[in-house]
Amino acid sequence: MTADLPHTVRSDARENRARILEAARAVFGEQGLDAPVREVARQAGVGPATLYRHFPTKQALIAETFAEQRRACRTAVQDALADPDPWRGFRVLIEQICELHAHSRGFADAFMTSYPAAMDFAADRERTSRAVAELARRAQRSGRLRPDFVADDLTLVLMAHRGLHDAPPAARLAASRRFAAYVIEAFRTPSDPTAPTPLLDATRPSRPDWLGGRFAPTPGAS
Image (cartoon, rainbow, N blue to C red; front, side, top):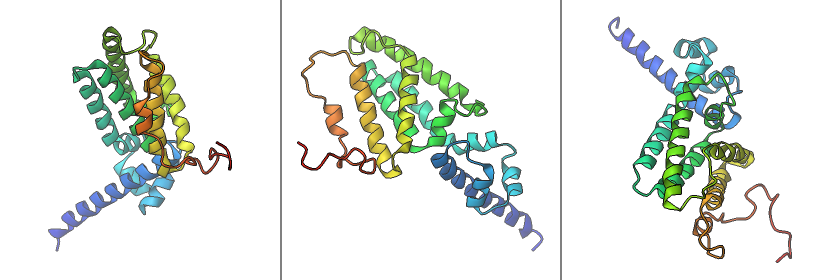
């Protein structure tokens, strides 16, 4: 029994840690990084002292909570830079970044420095910024990306994209994909102004009232 005790303690600790991270993803994902740590502990079913034993600071909890998203972001950057078609790499990177941000308000906050204490994300932001700048240079040389694009435009895009977190979670991803499609069309060098926009067609929502009816068409309108 004595020999089994350390194993039981370690098992309980692992389970507590897993519950804390699951709760943190839910709480920070919907409420953003200003959500209190006590709310994370409450949803995890542990006391604040238990949470702080695993994560001594809120910054440490945030870094671990979004470790998977950070890895996905790094992979997206690497894949985009490795793509032999620079316009495709540029386009897919924007799509993937928007999707990552759509899934979690907290990750978007950390990535966009809305929560200055999330310093672990500084390297991710810098890496992504360098990748976008390099992809933009390549895509502009290929003639596919408009020549007046600058890397800081991505920051403007993501600032606007954060507004989608006001949409219901079930509709947020579809809205994000459509938003990204509009952005990509705006950045593309227009070859034919009358050409159709297949990206927008592919991301068209199945219902027009994805924001609770606020943008539903007026009855009888054409």
